[in-house]
Length: 530
Image (cartoon, rainbow, N blue to C red; front, side, top):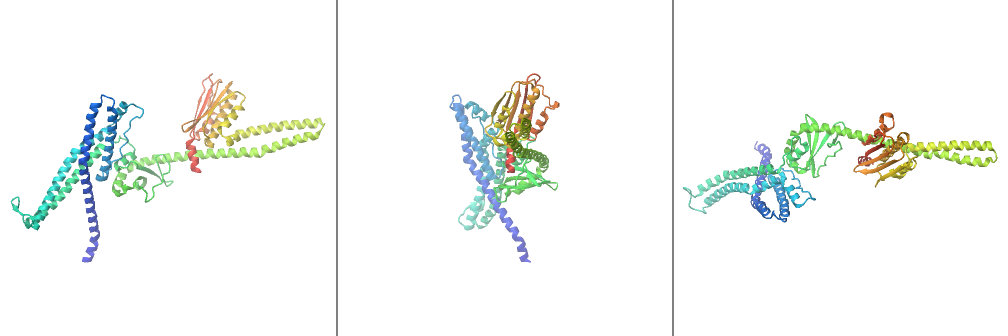
């Protein structure tokens, strides 16, 4: 019976020992924060009030502004130091402070005014000013309680050992009184720890009050969780059940961190369903109840965000499928063009050569020669039509040399003057090239058929992540998609790559067709396929 009781109490003994170690460690960290606050707080006061005096004396001359600007940067670094100390010693969980920005292009006065107008900066300065007096009070209360504990313990030990004689109040110091004093030192020590804990609570609340920026109503869930957990790098991955993957807010796949890395993740469930995963710093695993509490509080909001992420994921998948269809269509076009060029077109060319050989063998037979000439004319026309057909399906020059030579060739073959203004530093993806080429080809076809223009201009350039192509003429204008000029087909072709097309065609003042095609997203997608 006794052995069984000892066996069952062993885990409890170990748990209590661990709790005592944690309390001792927490007390020492709180004590270290209070002790460090005395010299640091005094330094902060010197910097703040010295800066006020120095700025007031030198503010009228130019040299005062750079000094104030440099001093503000030093004070902000001190505020960051306080955040790190509060997090490490008091478990304050304060998110990293934002950088104290100032425009580099402005003068010293503009930069100083911009920096000093920051509310976050003045909140940090307020903490630096309050650090010393609050720490003095905390240190005084803790010191008094600790001194009383030490005095009782010393007197008790001296009474027990007989090392000291005399009186403690009306009582003579003897071994009996020594036992009483040692016993009184225990609750006084507990009181000292309680005073230190209370002082730490006040100091932690002060640091959070002044260093944690309040988020506006309706702030993103990620920002609220990052602030409450003190992890600026926190990310949220939303669960898409039908695909069984986690995605971010844009619908892109998110891999979860592996065990043993510096990142960890915590599952979030709502009404028995997997909703999301909070990806956070691995150090937060030391307090999983904190992460779980934050996850439970935000589960409803995360469920709503999950629905949005699911929708974005489906839209992203639809966009990717459209890109795949366009790429497959262009690949089929290139294959058909290559088959026509290497197959039927080469056969017709061979027939033309054989007809020439046949004409040379006919000699002076006018009827036969005339028949061969007619066959050659028809064969030449068929070959030209086949080349035009192959060019309309997918021009070989576009595949071999790129968009710029293809557009220049298109302009050179037009029956009216076409100027080229093409500035392409690199080739875009093949799908983008094909769409851009056919936009210009269709636009020039419309110019020849309907515009009654005397000249035209085609342009191609990059604008950020878009490829912009334009065709402009000086014709009669009035282009209307409803009249079947092929503009709606162009719009569909450009829209398949998430591009846009704009047609400006005032009556009597020419027509401008402009297409903007995102090239980077297509390039990244095709790179992912590779």
